[in-house]
Image 1: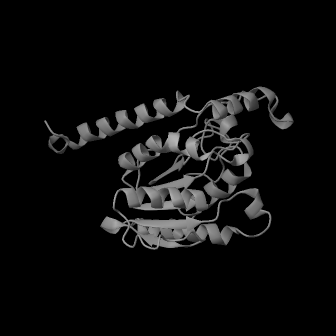
Image 2: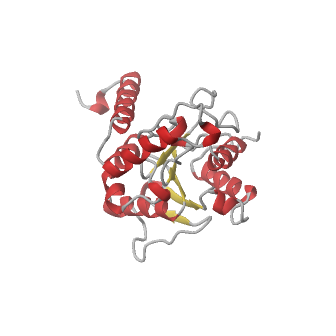
Length: 246
């Protein structure tokens, strides 16, 4: 029996199993010695403010279940996701991201402090180009390449209608994937990253650019709350989701 012959419930269960397998494969990955050592060392040394916390200290899987909006970041924060085990959780970047998602009906609460905090996403998945926290927040080219199969599987399972790229590296990763799959409407010249930048993909899909909600951007005012709210408002519109006010 082909996948198209399966009942909706059977298809849903199959997707769930594939998503869970992807989760397990990410967490157990040890392809990059430098990154694995760094994640573990950070988990041992810890930051003083979190000395009583049990750090995750390993690759971090995507957060959410397959949905039509895929938010793409760079990599887990050393004392954020690498500590809590959930994307954009436990640091200021996550505070900005999930508050904007909450404001647009994509999250049930604006706070993200830990895996047991009750946060749930609706119609949205959060992932990263690199699954491990890199030293100085800079993964090497080969390390990003090692994570590429996970990124591709995430896209295949989610079949997103809208990508929200948080930063230039995430933007380039989505563009590269679209070019490889012949899914970019105007591949030459390649679309450039910018806050609010929009690139059209095949089959009515879109790539949206957003400045990364890092402290470097939020503390300097390069990224403001109205700016990130506007990006997610556009993402909901392009995905065909009516905006829900908080």
